[in-house]
Structures are given as structure tokens and as C-alpha cells.
Length: 161
Ligand SMILES: Cc1cc2nc3c(=O)[nH]c(=O)nc-3n(C[C@H](O)[C@H](O)[C@H](O)COP(=O)(O)O)c2cc1C
Image 1 (cartoon, rainbow, N blue to C red):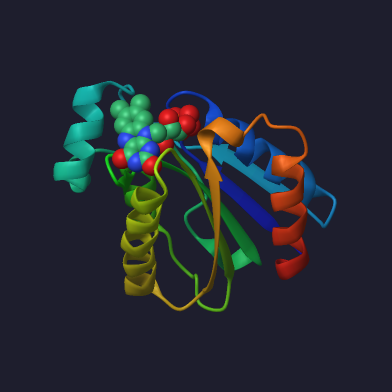
Image 2: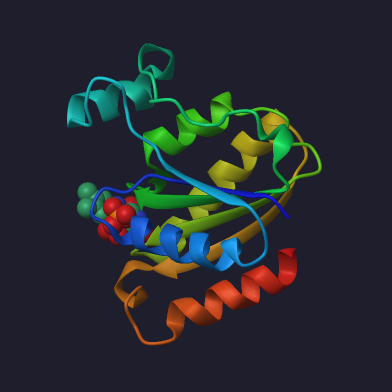
């Protein structure tokens, strides 16, 4: 199984979870990992511009064609009830997702908000094709709790590998 892990992180929690998924997926086959970055800086202005006018911002080079992968794991920070704009932009630009497995891993503080964010992402993804979506919800305050993440990751990987 060839996997790709893509994430964006403001404060490090999503980065931590994404790297944990990366380590677990590596045991199942070739796995690449990329952190989304904006060309021209990560400031608030860029992020707002990306949310309002995604075509005016650009992400640093990352794999957009998922043709060579079986699985994509997206590390998604929930901010204001929505994914970080870089994640939205990535989904709007990726391709060849039909028949792929996509783990959408939400790092959140408020359950209802993460739920809202997952519906938003599902619509974005379905606009681009028809992959199998596996949702994973990780409260940010549990990220470092002993065994919590390991349990979630191993259960998720059992479903996809
Ligand atoms: C400005 C700000 C807004 C946030 N808004 C939400 C929200 O609407 N819903 C939610 O569930 N969590 C919210 N959170 C909590 C984040 O999801 C949490 O801090 C998470 O760790 C962010 O991922 P990161 O550490 O990778 O940046 C917010 C956090 C910040 C700093």
C-alpha cells in the first residue's frame, strides 16, 4: 500500500498526529509526508486571502495527483468550524481520487464544530470524485494522552490496510 500524508498545522497538534500516522503507515508500505505551506508566507493575511479567494494564493509544491497512491491521510486543524484554508485549497486542487481511501483526521476543540467541518470537507471531496472517506476525530487536548493516539491510529489502519 502506497500512502501520502498531507497536513497543515498552526500550533503543532495536527503535525504531531500526522507524523504519528506517517510512522504507522510506513509499516504498511511506501509513505510520503508533506506539510502544506503557502508560497509567500504563512501570515494571517495570506490565510484570510486563501479562504476568500483561494485562486489568489499558492501552496508550495506538494503531490496533487493521487494516481500513484492508494491512500491519502489528511491532517485537518478545525478553526472557526472549518478546515484551515490550506486544506481546503489542497482538496480543491488535488486529482485522481476515485477509488482511493482518504483518512480525514480532524484535530479539534469542540465536537459539534468538528462534525460541521467534516460535512464541509465531505462536500468538497465529493465535488472532486468518489473516494472512500474514513473520518477520524482527535480532540487537541487528548493528543498527548497515553495510548490515546496509538489506539485511534491502529483502529483506523486496521480499516484501511
Ligand atoms: C483561533 C482558533 C480557532 C479555533 N476554532 C476552533 C473551532 O471552531 N472548532 C474547534 O473544534 N476547535 C477550534 N480550535 C481548536 C483547534 O482545533 C486546536 O487548537 C487544534 O490543536 C489546532 O490544530 P494545530 O495545533 O495543528 O494548529 C481553534 C483554535 C484556535 C487557535
